[in-house]
Length: 442
Image 1 (cartoon, one colour):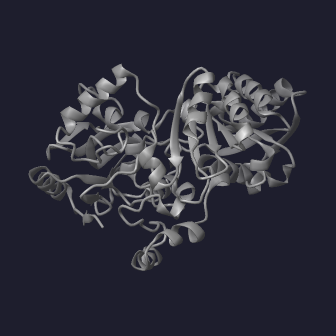
Image 2: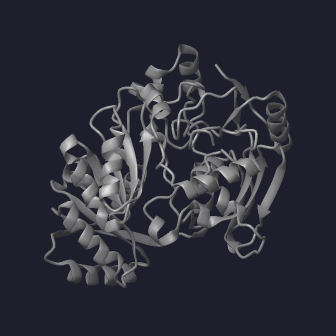
Image 3: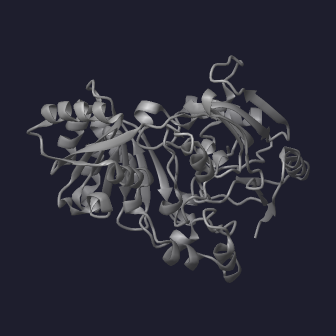
C-alpha cells in the first residue's frame, strides 16, 4: 500500500512535495478520494491527501465571492450559499454514484482539478469560468497564488483557468476563490415525450436557440428514463427543457415554447420539486450509477471496509490507494463523449449495435455512453466520435486494468501534446505530481 501524507496547511503541502522532489518519489494528489477512479490508473509512492485543508475562509454574498480551502466539500459550500439564495451556477456533478462511492464527498479542489460542470454548462460555463483566484503548490515545491478575490481583475496569465482540468498533474490546490450567483426563484421543465434522439436534438436545438432562456436541455431514452423517478411513469422517451426564473416569466416562456414545439411530440411538464429531482439525476447520471454496498465494499479489504463505515456521512468511503477501480471490475464501462449537439444522436446510433445505452445532455452535445460489459470497447467509441465529425471521448468508469491499458482521455494532436508537455515541464519537471494521470509520460 502506498504511503499517505495528510498535510494540515499549505506549509505542510510544500514540505510534502519538497520531500518527494528530494527523494525522487511520486505523489498522487487527492482530496477526499471520491474521484480516485477518474483518469488513467497510476502507481505512485505516496498519496498526498488534501482533505485536511478544509473550511470556508471568505464568503461575501453581496459581492458574489467565496473562498475556501481545497479540501472543503462541495456539499458544504452548496449548503452555505443556498442559505443566501445563491448557487454554483455551473452546477457541478457528483461523481460518487457513478464510481460506486457515497455521494457528497467531492471537494472544491477536486471540482476545479477536474473542471466539472452539469446541465447548465452551455449557458453558465464550466468550473474554470467561475474561478477567480487560487493558491497552490507546484511540483517544484513552490507555493504560489494567482488571480484574486474580485470578479474583475487583471493579473497576467490566467492560471486559475489554466490549471482547471489538469487533474492534479501540474499543481496541488490549497485554496480557491470562486464566484457565486443568485439562485433562480423557481423552476419548471417542459417535456416532449416519445421522440427519437435525432428528433429530440432538433427540438432541443430550436428551444435553446430561441428567445425563451432555456437553461437545460436533455434527452433520456425510454429505457433510461425508467430509472429516473421523476419521469419513470412516462412510458416513453423524455426530452426535457428547463426554465428558471420568476413564476410569471416561466409561465409565459413555457407557453411560447409549447406553441413552437407543438406537433413534435406529446407535451407535458414537471413542477418545481420534480424538476429539481430530475435535473439532479441528469447532472449525476444516476441511471448509470453503481451500487455502493454491492460494488465498493466488495473491492475493499476488511480494514478499509471498517474505515468506510466509520467515515462521517457525506465524506464517502475512501478507496484503498492502488485499488482505485478494483471494485468496478464487473460493472459496465462508461464514457463521457462531447461532440457538436446535432451530432450527439449519431454516437448513440453507431454504438446501438453493441448494446450501448445513452443519456444526452447539453442539447445533445454531451453523450453519456454505458457499454453493456466491463470492456470499454475503445476503438468502437473513438470511431463513432470520428465519424460524428470529431469531439472528445473520456473513459469515466472502468477497471483499474482497463484504465491502465487504454487511452482514457482523447488522444492529443502533436501541437496540443507538445503544449501540455511544456506546461508539465514548467510546473512539475520532476514528474512528481500524479504522473501519467492524464497522459503517459506527462
